[in-house]
Amino acid sequence: MLPTIAIVGRPNVGKSTLFNVLTKSRDALVAEQAGLTRDRKVGRGKVGGMPYLVIDTGGLTDASDGIATRITQQALQAIQEANKVLFVVDGRDGLTAIDEMIAQRLRSFNIPVHLVINKTEGMQSELVNIDFHRLGFSPVHTISASHQRGIEAMMETVLSDF
Ligand code: GDP
Ligand code: MG
Image (cartoon, rainbow, N blue to C red):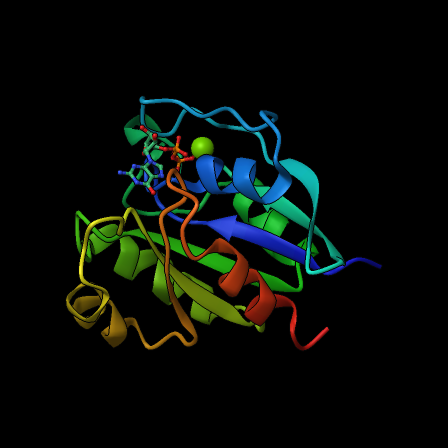
């Protein structure tokens, strides 16, 4: 079985953009509108000759479904099917209450979680990380999905113990 990586996080942090980079496809819906990707999507990718599967999720549902209280069924199913989770947060917004809630939820799964701080292009990484470190996840990766920064180094670490 290929290493399977689930991308999880609140809406609009760049999960689908990251999925597209990791699969070099346009298969995941990337939208300005928060929470638009509702179904999970599976794609194939490769880094350093190592193939993997990646699952994009809608993360949390929209407000009418209780955004502050639960992860969607798709995200839960993706986590159950995955070997590792990339927990994506927004380096520009900083740590939010929803991030903390998702973090707490992720800790209840017996699965390795890498923290991925996205949208960090043009930011000093030492400053970006401070807030997020208290979530307690390691390793922490500082990336820009839209500018394709830090992706290869991140994936080499993610795949290193398969
Ligand atoms: P999702 O809801 O988590 O799947 O987020 P999307 O991938 O749909 O992206 C939400 C918004 O963030 C879009 O406008 C993206 O263009 C933007 N975005 C994604 N990655 C980055 C990044 O690395 N830097 C910046 N500045 N914007 C990004
Ligand atoms: Mg999305």
